Image 1 (cartoon, rainbow, N blue to C red):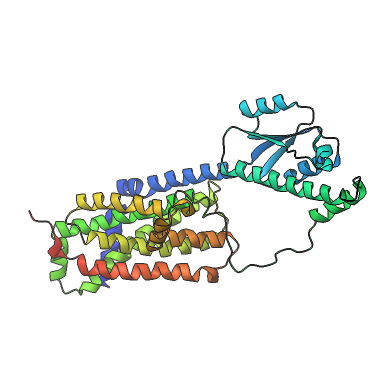
Image 2 (cartoon, rainbow, N blue to C red; image 1 turned 135 degrees about the vertical axis):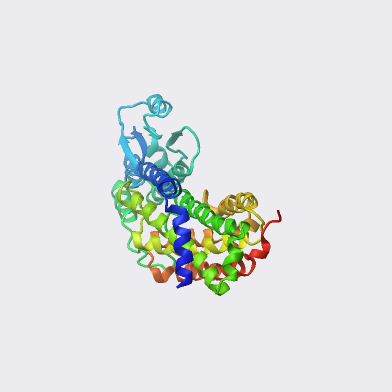
Length: 383
C-alpha cells in the first residue's frame, strides 16, 4: 500500500535514528511528564487554614465547624492563639490563611448587632476569595437564625440549636444534572500544556513534508504512478502515528510514573487527544500549504499556536476574556478538547462529549481537505 510506505518513511525520519528518537520523542515527552508530576503534587496540597475561636457561645462553634467541613482546606484549630499570633502564622508562611472568631461573636449576633470573623491572608487569590465568600455566607445564615429565634424576646438556645442542626442537614439534594462540569475549565494549565505540546510536535512532522516539497522530493513522488490522495493520506497517517506514539509515552509516564491524572481514565483522555491530534494535523497541513519554506512555517506557527492556545483557555479560564474573544475561541480546536476533558472529569461519559468530538473531527476534515489541496509541489520556494 503506497500510503503506508510514505507514512513509514515519515516515522523513520522523525524517530528512526537514535538522535531522532531521543530529541524528537523521549526528551519532550519526559519533560512534559515531569511537569505533569509537579502539577500533580501541587494540586494534591490543600491550603492550610488556622482557626482561633475565642467565642464561648454557640454560633462561633458553628462557624468554625462549617469551615472544617470544607474538603478543600486543611484546618488547624488553634484556640490558644491570639489574633496577632494568627497574623504572624500567615506572615511567616506557617498558614495560608487564618480566621479569628472574637469572644463576643455569639453575643453580638444574638443582640442583633453586626459582627464578623476576621480573615487574614497575604493576597487575594481564587481559593481564599472562595473562603471569604464562605465566611460571609455562613455569617449571614447564623445572623438570620439568631434573629429568627430572638424575634419574640430573649433567644431560645434550644430552638437555635435545632434550627442550625436542620440547616446543616438539608432534605433536598441534587441527584443528577444534565450538564456535568469538572475542574479543568477553571484550572486548565496542565491539559493546555499537553495540547500545545501536541500542536508543536505535529508542526514538526508537517515540517518534514514541507521539506520534501522544497527539495523537490514531493514533485518526484507526484510523477510516480501514485494518486495524489495516496501521497496526502500517507503524510497525514505518518504524522498521526508519530503523534500517537508521543501521546502514549506522555500519558503513560504522567499516569503511571509521575501520578498525574485529571480525574478521567487513560483511555478516555487518549481518545479526546487523538481527536485533537487529527485536528492539529489538519491545521498544521493547512498552514504549511500557505507558506513557501520551513522558516516561514516556523514563524507562522509561532503566530498561530501560542495565540490560539491563549484565547482557547489553555493557560487560564476562558471566562475572564472579553466576549468577542470567547466567541473567537469557538473556532479553535483547543477549546473543544478542554471542554471534553472537563466534562469527563465532572463524571460524564463518552456520550456526553459527542458534540465536542464531532466538532474536532469536522475541524480536522475541513483542514485536512484544504491542506491536501494546497500542499503540492507547485508551491515550492524559488531558488
